Length: 271
Image (cartoon, rainbow, N blue to C red):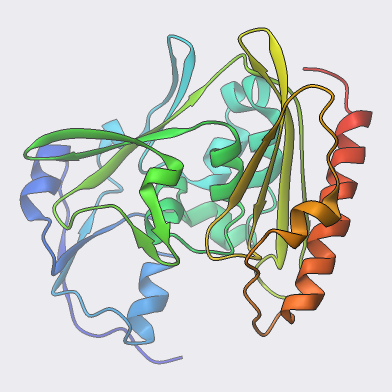
């Protein structure tokens, strides 16, 4: 693998200092698992990187009212091992422990995964299923948005060059039970399926989110008693063929894994 191109490095200790350094050619550096790889491949050539790892506010992991708040510099492994995630969102813990490999989990951040908008992400589908929102901050103030508002396409997120993703907020007390299954033949998933029963003002809504097989995750919400069939869902999706499989093959895998996820969900005990 080629060496990194030359760049300057900023080491801010506050969010304000970080925002002053950010621009189109000056990019935030969290875990760097995606960014540094893109730089080695000469897909990105920033003038400088703004290291956000030493900003205390971005390492927050706490309960705020009825939400779990995860700071922008929290790694997958840190979140997975945190008592609040273990106790309040075990499905998120299970997904995070399946991300990449130990090195990726130890250095990569949830926020970085979102901002890079990797279409074969494990993290994006589960956060979409959990109704997570994010806060982007800049000198103009904060912006709050949902996951589907943030992720606009493959490797394309709605972050302005001078913005920083400061936190992820996940509502608590809504998930009754949840599962995540994925089919993986290479480093990243070919198909990932999150299925959960969701308390929506007293009604139980069954939600299915499919990732990796399409450019953007696909979410379906089903009313109580509404029939759900993997094949029917798969037939409506715009599957992207790639080295992991043809359109026909991946559509077949989606159908199988949706049915398996629903069967596993029915076996899960309610939280």
